[in-house]
Length: 430
Image (cartoon, rainbow, N blue to C red; front, side):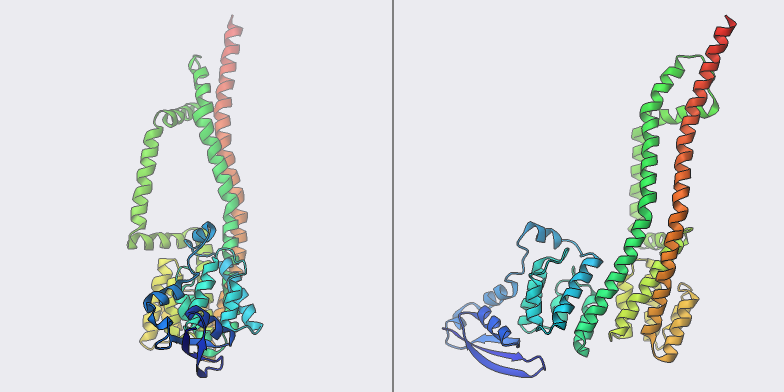
């Protein structure tokens, strides 16, 4: 049986050496794992059958064994980023296993048997294989950027360096759950108004293209002076039915022009700026961005990530170009030796409350705590703003749709009354 020599480390960090009589390198890695060790290197002894094999091929097969998606479901899941709640569940499960006293490789092996929606099984398999070969968990995660972002990897690295990986994982799970809750509230607040708008517009289009032409035929056969509203409605209906292709062409050209503008840096900046200035919706957008900035930066700093790295990761997480640019300028100012509060105030983007709380945090030596208070404050305000927006939009949408449908009915009914009145006058004259 081939013999393998290995170098590994205990959980305490102590390096140990030894040899094993096993069939192949994979079996050697499994044996080292059962010993509760973390392998650094595993080499076949000179002269053994294993040493005569093609080592690069063996290494490749060992590093990729079981990593590729095996089912259609896993292949589809591996093509998209996991949702925040899915990532929170995965992180919480890993933290629970490590908290129970499992070695990291054993915990990752258990993760392959746990059902985590949105994160394929081969992700945990790949992480376990990398760790068994002596790499740190953060290095292993950095090789799967679609699943684990820079924020995730850097926080895990900070947890490894501080020896508080379980605590860091729990904080991250809480972090992702909070953001998932905010996103869910934001989405649910827009569902009902969007539904009302789609239904109302659908009714109007159906009436204009299918129902009204029948009334037009009836009115056209009668020598009746139609009301102005009915005549306007008939003209609009003629445009809908006779020039629908032109309307689609104009709409397509407008969408294409908007997308081209949206894909430019200037366009992205302008659109994000417009979003922040919109009535009602703009306030909700800003509160969400302020809370996201403060929560992300607080979580990173709280887990020992250096402030410059934390600002860079926060900048990458944010989607709004205006806030991203302000964060980038803040990072540049901090690099030059300024405090965090100074560039935040100079940007004129972040609210004074945030600046004041960060300044107090710097004076007391607890910037992460101050940012956490900022995040809690703006997330609470966001919940209130979402309720106000929902309560405001719903009646506005209902009134608008009712007004549109009411105008259609009034135009048709007024024409019908004119027609009946004309027929009655004709019969009375006889």
